[in-house]
Length: 496
Ligand code: HEM
Image (cartoon, rainbow, N blue to C red; front, top):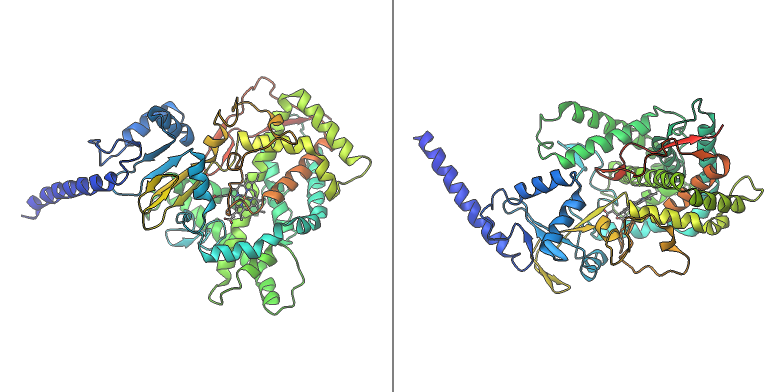
């Protein structure tokens, strides 16, 4: 009896599923979509199409979606997920996505992916980067913004100079200088910069190859990416070894942060703290509610480490790769840096304005290979119309920074590295250049990152003569997981 009921229940389930899917998809029938709403493959959705394209296009998300968009010759498309799961609205129509990104009250961020794994707090839900965009986010952002104003950054000059000098000396002290992968070294540098400038901590990360702090961040990035790209990761009992590592590393980092935070937290609450760093602002930003626990503040602490480290390191390393391929660019950069230093040992804050060509090159690297390639938003519970497109409730909107940066009508010869796109006086239209995203949720650390990249790169170019150990390598291969990064690292040689 029961056995006979199983196939009937299954058939009923499939019928109901098809009907629900059909009505769900009808809501989006006014927008070109993959697959078209009448597709017989409602259940598996566009799975087979995606797999076919993905294989052809090397599993590059932007390339896959762009290729679908080109097939449909539309600037806005819907990508259906199987069943009634919210589809994704993908658009490269500027008046559409610019409105979405500008309105933080209507279009919130989706639930964070790495807050918890099987109930264990990893990044946690409260960090400003992951906050969905409610009043809590707005309050935090307003309180933290001053920590990134010019006046505050000026104070960080000494510390950044110290770290730039430290990494330069470290590179010079390496026994074998012919073939150095500079990416992990600059990752440790960026981590020590944020650890020291942001949180006043003194641990050595740059010269400690197996620094436990760096290892923990790297492992969390690596295993975190598995969670995002493997549908089965969330099921308890799967990926046992990886989860064990993730839990250990998150526990280690959160424990360390909690310990370092406790004293500061107490003295700030008592009004006796005189330290003025990013962490002080993070704590102040979290004081609006007495319901918040120290672990909520650790979430923010954590988010700053994650957001500020790899992105900046990837940018600096990628610039060195391009520089080593182009002798004229290298000569211009070295000349400019030498003039800015003059006979001074260290750069001063105002000298950074003179590094005009270096800034152009950093901007072009961030256009060509934006480390953070996509951004998601969710539409509200009721239908809204944006730039004449009606969005059904709870639509997921995918904004591809990568696609916008490679649109030929905005950036002619988009695949070419050309820093003259950012020549002084050239106008860049808002929402066409967004390595730090755009609108109210633009990266809070963008000036910090530019400043750090300029100081570290200028110091390396002044102190060291670099050469290209692989002149035959003509293309930089990029691999995208959580961030887009050079696949095989970035190798440099140093002339003895
Ligand atoms: C080249 C370096 C960097 C790049 C390319 C970059 C890129 C981005 C992007 C694209 C976003 C928006 C993310 C989204 O929409 O989901 C973002 C947000 C953020 N970034 Fe950065 N970032 C960089 C450096 C930094 C640094 C150095 C810090 C900290 C010192 C930082 C802290 C943050 C924070 C806290 C947010 C969240 C802001 C908010 O939602 O209000 N970033 N960044």
